[in-house]
Image (cartoon, rainbow, N blue to C red):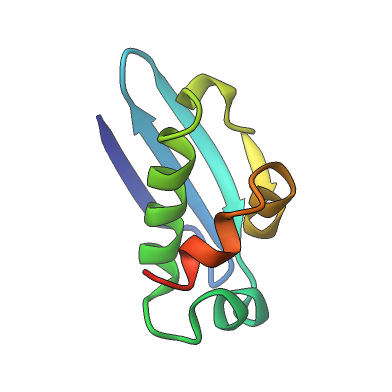
Length: 87
């Protein structure tokens, strides 16, 4: 499995996940959410990559939304915020 994160602009990232099938996702991450989740300890790119590792441990890449704001992960997985704080 590979996860490739590319910044499209300051708040938007393209993520390509390759497993049995390849999927592409557009993820939005604002500065305020980045600080709330990580307190600035890791880069936005690292947060996006680790967020996908978190998701892929729970569901296949074909089930991950193709476009979403990073904070919606916690609506599906309440333990996400706690996990993100430890990265």
